Length: 167
Image (cartoon, rainbow, N blue to C red; front, side, top):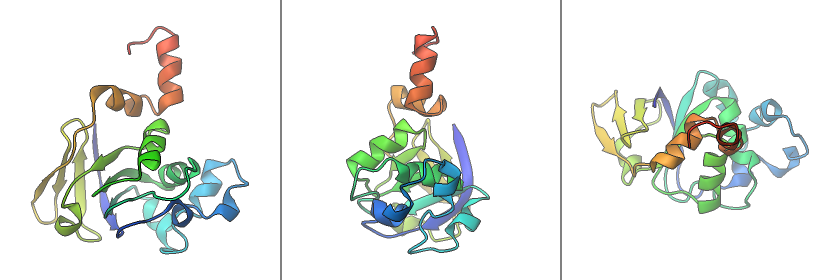
């Protein structure tokens, strides 16, 4: 799997309340959640993300509460992939469960600037910064996680498996 898009860069400790403020959690509509993604720190985020972007972040991205609406809001806003120094574990797993690719890449914050064009090769765990020519190594996801993401998330993957699809 390969994703290309402009980088939108954030720092350390971006928590789930920043990703999708709790006042919007009354909606079950992922498109409605997407309209409010990152609004407290980046009001233009939904407009920028519509074209398909790759979030690059520092340490502990997705910390805070365990709301699965956070990765849903980002995915439906147009985020193709998130690459961070590290993730809060529950956000990391929630992202995989909803089919939003996430990669940990030590040093990524120093190698990517906001607006850089990136290509993420998920199967290899590589990020190519098309703007500066650097190849960044990430922690490669295991094959079973790649399959969940390919299938669009955990529910879709389980439906496929129970219907006799490959697992």
